Each structure stands twice: as C-alpha cells, then as structure tokens.
Amino acid sequence: MYKVRTHAASNAKSKAILGRLLKEADYLELLKLEKVEEVIEYLKRYTHYSEVFSDIGMSIGDHEVVIKKYFFNTYEKLYHFYMDAYRNFFKAMFCRYEVENLKLFIRVLSRNEPLSDLRASLIYSELYSNLNYDQLEKAVNMQDLLDMIGHTIYYEPLVVFLEEDSEHMIFHMEMVLDRCYFSQLRSSIEALKSEDRELMLELLGINVDILNVQWIYRGRQFFDISSEELFNFTLEGGRRYDYKILKELCYMGFDAFRSYILGGDYSDIFQDREYMMERAMERHLFYRLDEYIKSTKLSIALPVVLLFKFEYEMRDLFTLMEGKKYQFENLKDLLIRELGRA
Image 1 (cartoon, rainbow, N blue to C red):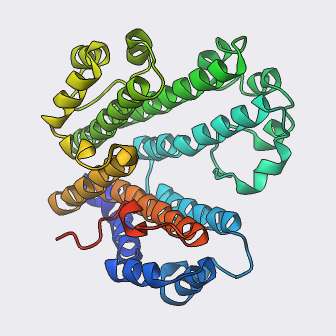
Image 2: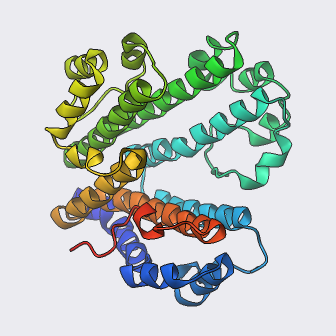
Image 3: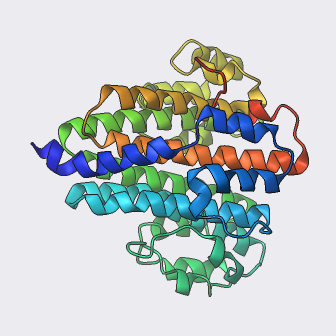
C-alpha cells in the first residue's frame, strides 16, 4: 500500500513527461537542418520545448541556459510529491547541481574573475539550496568563498587544499566535491524503503563504476597520475568494483586495466573510439535505464530514469547546436542516443 501512497502521483507525472521527450524521428529531422536557428525553430514548433523559447535571436549560450532551467524546474516539481526520506533523496540528487556551481565558482575565482556575471546562468533551487547565492557572488577570492560556505558540508573537505597552487587546488577541490555529492546521495538512499533502496543502490553503483573507470583511464592515459592518487580519489559504492578490485585496477598497468574492463559488464565503453569514451559511458547508462522502466512498477525508479533521460536529451541538443554552429561532421555519432538502434 505504501507504494501507491508514495509513488503513484510522481510516477504518473514522470510517465507523462517521459512521453513528451524527443523521439528518434525528431533527432533525424534535427540532423537534416543546417543552422542553429532552424534547430530552435523546430523545437519551438514541434516539441515540448515550445513553452520555453521566445526569442529566436538568442545566442547558443542563452538557449542552453533556458533549456537547463526548464529541465531543472520540470524535475523539481516531482520533489513536491514526496515526503520525509524521499524528499531528502531528491534534495541529495539536486546537490549535484550545487556541486557543479561550486566548481564553477572555484575555477572563476582562480582566474581572478568576478562571480557576479555567473548568476543568470546558474541552476539551483530557490527553496532548499544549501548555498546563499546572493552572498556567494560577492566573494572576491577563495578564502571569501570558503568562509561563506563554512556552515555547509563542503567546507571541511575543501579548506585543506586552500594553500595549494592554483592548478592542484582546482583539481583536488573538484574531486572532493564529487565525493561529497556521492556520499550524500548514498546516505539518502540508505533511508529509503527496501525495494527503492535496492534499486537506487544498484543504479548508483553502476554510475560509480563507470565514473571510476573513466577516472582511472584518464589518469593513466593523459595525466600520469600516480597509482596512490588514483586510488585515493576513486568513488566508493560501486556495483562491480569494490575496494579491493579498485585498488588492483589503480595499481595495474594500463593494458592490463583495459583488458580487465573489456572482460566485464562495461566492455562497450572501450569498443568505440577511445577519445569518445565519455559518450560511450553515457550511452551505456542511457540504455541500461530502459531496463528499470520495464522491470519496476510504482517505485522511485521512474522519476530517477526521467532525470537521466531528460538530461541526456538536453546534452544531445547542446551537441546538435554546437555541431550546426561549427559544422561538425558525423554529428549523429556524437549523440548519446544511438539512432537506428533496435
């Protein structure tokens, strides 16, 4: 009975929104277009984005901000269908955007640029954010920023890196912010009902596995990061790769690491061109989400699947706009959605 009380309304709303997302036919039409303005016009005329576009003269950057805020506001409405632990779970999910805002602040301040120009492009909740953006935009250096978030969970992990040189400071702060987010999310999942908890821990575990593979790969291939530091910044809570396996992956040679991944659940990550690994990882998760839609009834899974699907659609639209602007070749191959897939 709790499933009906807890999930019926949010699942109905999520299903309705999922039904409005772009279809393969929309992507095929968008690929035929030549200009960004034509893409925007198509979205205005034929899709659920019709309600958010008003000015065809906006820049790509402006359109991206409008789409991001539309996405966030749409998803935020689901929060109001829930109570108690489930509301806390949604708050934890939204902390991801809070973390991304902090990363942006850190990068901008490290360049000695003002934060005041960022406000219009930020995505955040007016209702339950942990950050006071009116105050934060007045920060002029990193010490100011940290003082202003001294009451939050972000302060202690960040302050230890304040005295590092700019490049290392940014790197380490961004890594610990990611860990803060996933730690919060996992804690919120642990408080859910057993079936929802099991589903979300599984999905979180897949996401963590994929991010750890990406981190180890990039650290080895591009940045020559030591095995110790690779391991220190891996995320906990993976589905396939526990503490012991992660440590082995961080300390083994690159070829052995690659062979290990190719022999497991995430082999498709390396099947494509490796410079497109991030796209391959997102595509892997995109199609795993369909399994949750088919296999679960009245659970937290559907709103969470909506979050991922909607965000991936948003990213594909940004790829299309950039591709039209700069005339990318093989634009179809850059999308997360695999067109023509059975």
